[in-house]
Image (cartoon, rainbow, N blue to C red; front, side, top):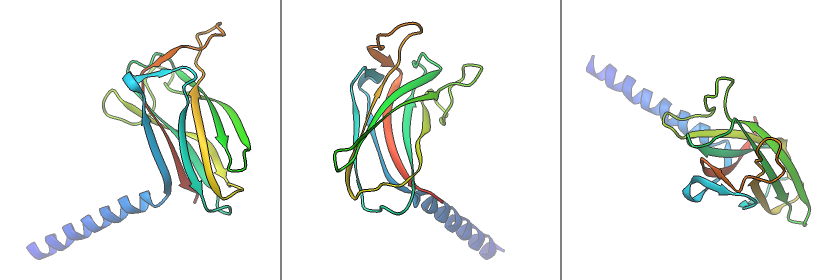
Length: 166
């Protein structure tokens, strides 16, 4: 009886190991940058450099935000600039919901820190082989104001990841 339980336990570990390694096979690139004092300065770019060698397969691109309970807003506005190896630049203004209707933070996490995996581009095919750079900065403003908030409190880390599509 002990031999059967030992085999089942070993089988369970093997399945768990395969599950965790297969989930990571989808990720091609991931990087995070910490924000000093969890206070993101306006117009301060967070930059990520990555290399592209595959111009055929589509990829999903994500912006990852780790925020704490000090984040005072229900949404997040970002401006991104994707710089291609040939000098082309694509600029986007993005808006993400950070809380649900009750004001509870969205994202994953058991503590006061929540991690949000936000779609940046779906099924993106990079047309050129080479080094790319993604620049991200926040564009948060108070209602009715033109001036950007000088320091966005509560953002601890900003990340970027590229995953294979299924």
